[in-house]
Amino acid sequence: MDLIADQIGHRFGALDVLDRVSFTVASGEVVAVVGPSGCGKSTLLSILGGLLQPSAGRAELRGEPPGESLNPLTFVFQDFALLPWGTVEANVAFPLEHTALDAAARRAVVDDALRRTGLSDFGAAYPKQLSGGMRQRVGIARALAVRPTILLMDEPLSALDSQTRELLMEDFVRLLADGAMGAVYVTHNLEEAVRLADRIVVLSRRPGRVREIVDIPMTRAERGAIGAREKLLTLQNDLWSLIREEAIDAEREVQHA
Amino acid sequence: MPSARCSMLDRAPRDDPASEVRPVAFRGAGFMPGGGRMAGWVALALVIALWQLAGSAGWVSQLFLPSPSAIAMAIYKLAMSGALWQHVSASIVRIGLGWLLGTVAGVIVGFAIGLSTLARGVGITFISALFPIPKIALLPLLILWLGIGEEPKIATIALGVFFSTAISVYSGVDAVPRNLIRMAQSFNVPFDAIVRRVIWPGALPSILAGFRITASVALLLVVSAEMIGAQFGIGAFVLQAGNLMQTDQLLAGVVILSLFGLAVGKAINMLEAKLLHWR
Image (cartoon, rainbow over all chains, first blue to last red):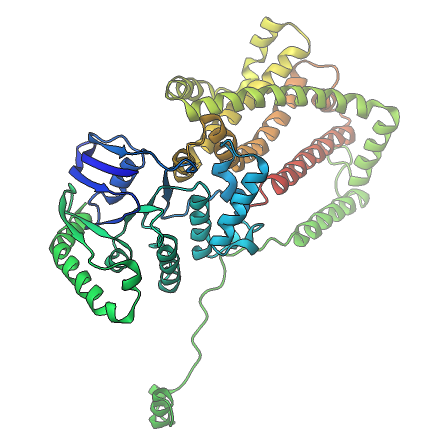
């Protein structure tokens, strides 16, 4: 199943946020969206996931998701969006409560999602008892439980410290390794983008337009090798040179706002 | 090899006042009141003891301020005669029915205002206009509409409870983090399930805080209503005792009201501990 951004534009009142943004996320592909602050990255993701009506253009799906997928387009949120009154298990089971799965099947899915994210021993814990990294693992487990076709990740690591970020990045690489799941990965962190994405959509400052789409000429497995570091750093610098001036302008704009 | 810090300290001349080593002054004290309640009970006991002493020693007249033992005796006599239960039960029934009616209506209207644009537009206008009216002022009108009996008293309490409940409910619904609702929508969770599983528990802290307020409102209104027109009830009893200058009985009624308020507060604390244990 492909996800297509077709000439998407959006305005918040008088504020033009996105302007004719088009790209396609092919089945199993990971596309990162980067750009200066306020360029509409998260707005674009909300539109792609059907949580926001675009002012112009539309988000489209091409092809059918696999039959077992319970929620083909599934979000992983920056602030985790966990129900504070639910245990880890309850949070992971929450999106399954309204599906046709029976209790035993639900239990099995939850157990599997907790195992895959290393949370099997934390099922009875409440979110307030967990670290930021663990909370995001719960968010990922909840997303995995509905067997998504495309993950829509909105700066999923930005609220975390650098060590936790590194560990979760490794988890993402592992989860996306078999190509069964694609992703749109919105981030302001270029290192995350080059580590994880097959392609990177670079947006201009507001109103966000597609400035460039950069292919990453390495598989994710190759990127894990020590020898690839220099190449990834070069890619990162190239991306930064694309964004830098606009990021400075966007920063000034925010300060004046 | 000594560290850089040690080296610098070592190099500093010991008799130079500029190089004198002194602890950093602690400036972080205060602004963190603890939850200790012992002091409160001790203070209460002291006040009661002093009050008793003042009464027993004849420093104050028993007519103007009966001693705690006299009040306790009055409560005991009331309980033994059966009058206490007659008055308390009448008040409890009025408060119970009025609070329940007002709460149910307030929760329904509060949720409607929290969830529907139309209901918000209409509801907030009406609530803003009617909430500030002292509900006891409506009692004569309610007597005219509903007759002399229990109905106008219950309706007065229900009205007082309704507005505060509706406000606390829609404020609670408004305060539910939008990201949780969007999360549920992103998983295609149906509307009714979002209300039950996300909005209701999310709004519950505010709703329970509202219960605390409405319990006090109900108590206030029942006493006022009973003072205006009732044969039985704590309010009627207090008024009657006042008219007959039976100040020990008057204060016995006040103590019973206070105990009732404490009991309701305790019940809400327990409800909060049970329903909001995740906080």
